[in-house]
Image: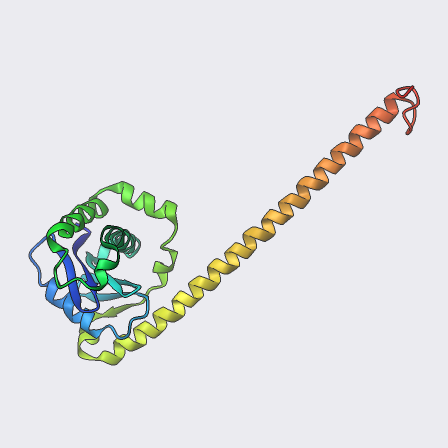
Length: 220
């Protein structure tokens, strides 16, 4: 399976988790949660052998998964986005006061179902491409997890670069929106000119048929 493990946490408090195989991913994931500084939104990845831990933090809620390196980053981050939306939609503001593993009995089943879907269903990748919302994932830096767990400053550097990349993504989206607006106005102008040209051609034809620009033989 492409995705092997996932959890949802508030800070270092794990609210739900699921593992599709026997692994020590849970203990490594908890160490990662302890090493992530601050509460800023971020998208980061940490490598461990041939596996990668992908982390998405939004509004104080952290969603993490461990995936096979061959899975790339588009699918795992699409999975994290999906899980985040489902979790918030299901529990609302309860996530900010819940005790450890308070949602595990119910939501671990959801994690398992979505891991199965994103790991094995080819439609998952098609939907991700259609949404086009994970383009910034291509630029996410992958840091070796051993360095992260041994040297906290590595993580700080990675977060700084992630924030910078997120800023670049925002500017790219802004430029893309401006480009679309420019193209739209250009198309409007072109359409107007084509309509005007068509009216001129019609007038010339009618004037020719009516023997003059004032249309004397057609207007009585």
